Image (spheres, protein in one colour):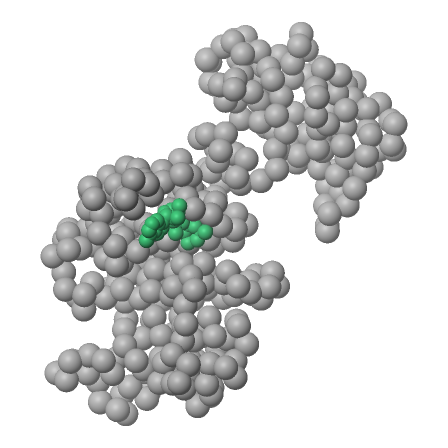
Length: 348
Ligand SMILES: Nc1ncnc2c1ncn2[C@@H]1O[C@H](COP(=O)(O)OP(=O)(O)OP(=O)(O)O)[C@@H](O)[C@H]1O
Ligand SMILES: [Mg+2]
């Protein structure tokens, strides 16, 4: 039922502007891949190319072994939920969901009773049973998105393409729909490409995340891969807050000034480098080796998170330290920080 999607060296220009610059990505059957990147990085363009709504200047897209261009629109069997989607406003929910089935040629069109049953089943699946007689204007935003998904699923797609389907919804509803989509995917197993610019959404939902920047994929990997082992400074910064320390690498150790701050490094590039450290990878410790002395200058709370801002001599910017369950220090207190994990990049 579901199919692999292979994206091979895609180049796409709009006049002189290169929107995609050599993008390759292998998507396994039934895999859920998130395309994550800032506005303008090429996410929608890539999704439209996979759907065949846009032609590549170079490269190709394969569904299984077949070049997508050799398949008729119908045989591609793509379910698409657009970024700025619109349900058909003059049609009821039921008519919207039935649309793809009703527009099939006569020989392949299920009969009316069958279509009614399928629509009922799909509305059940997206947890909107019994709403088939309503019009889109009589639904909440989250309900409309689920109808759009039901409409995309109705044609039994081989590939499901979702372009920021929850983009317009508030944070709470997004979270609910995220969990719901994950579950739906587990049950239906469609090969799915999901576009978002929300890091949390991508990391939580996807089997793998592809991070786009400026028309290129900077890294593809599981949430843990990309979060804990970012391939580039861009990926590291895009996925969450991070402190930066200029360091010198000697052997397997990084030094801040003449103080060793992180050992056991496998990247043996040596010389000047930038060490990127997430706030949760700084721990307040007693006087021990590999600790960085600093002074607490500010404490703040951001939702469930407690943070300390710590000034370190020789560093222009204060370090952000996640306190988690650590005992909060006092403002003005002298503390020592241990770096538990960091990513090294070439010095800027
Ligand atoms: N039809 C077009 N003509 C000219 N330029 C285009 C066209 N479509 C997209 N672009 C440009 O290509 C780049 C990538 O656009 P795209 O819509 O793929 O970005 P995106 O990553 O989806 O961004 P967003 O998160 O804002 O939706 C942008 O700079 C955009 O202006
Ligand atoms: Mg877009």
